[in-house]
Length: 141
Image (cartoon, rainbow, N blue to C red; front, top):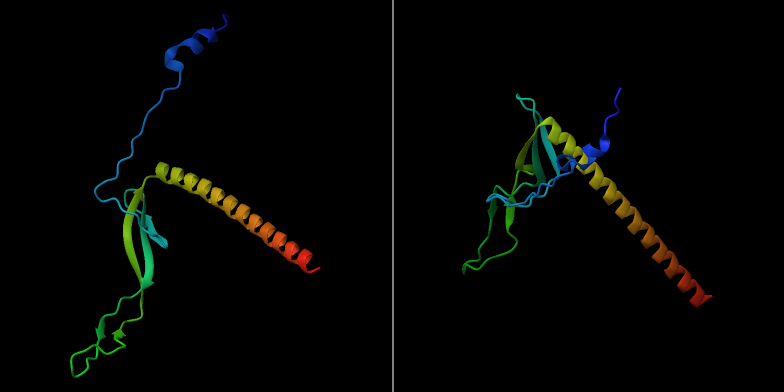
């Protein structure tokens, strides 16, 4: 049985990696949002549907400002609110399975990076605190 010549395959230009350049453009609706959480589930077409929201206290339903007889403003203004917490839906994101898995991996990587950074900063702060304590002790001792 003849052995396959892999040298020829390795030199074949079609086997070399190719590059694809991606350019990023912001859509007309691009904006930065703050997300306190997400709500969602599976869509009827088998996608993952997430609604990102931020939380805040409810704005007042009304307010009353008492005016002096001369028309000048008197403080304080009284606000009337339901007292509810509002979850304001900022955007909806729909992901297919492959994209969701890729996003999960990306998030896992960013979470690990952030945890490492936080740990490093905490260790540096502890070291600075210890150095300051030793410096004070050596000056007073």
